[in-house]
Amino acid sequence: MSAALESVNLAAGVTGNLGSIGYGLAAIGPGVGVGIIFGNGTQALARQPEAAGLIRTNQIMGFAFCEALALIGIVMGFLFKA
View 1: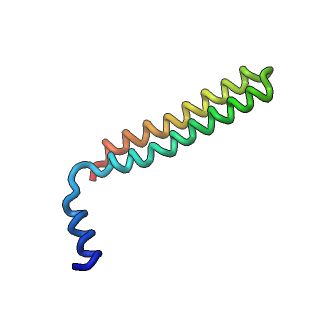
View 2: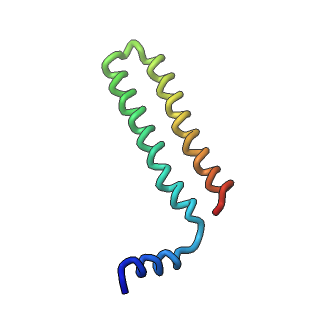
View 3: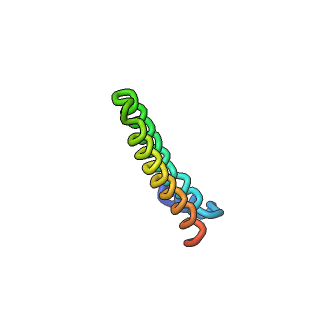
């Protein structure tokens, strides 16, 4: 049996909502984004401690935008079922 036929047979046995797998993979992006935001914010605070208020405000706004994208992604998985 060829490899193409074997992969078709394996794919036919997959059950459940594939959207949840897609969301799990899509959640990697906001996770990396949040890590970059707080990592660079920590470096900025170390370089300019007098600008702590402005840096912290920008960090929180960036975190909120990244998490909003993740929440929109999980809602789309429930709204658009295949």
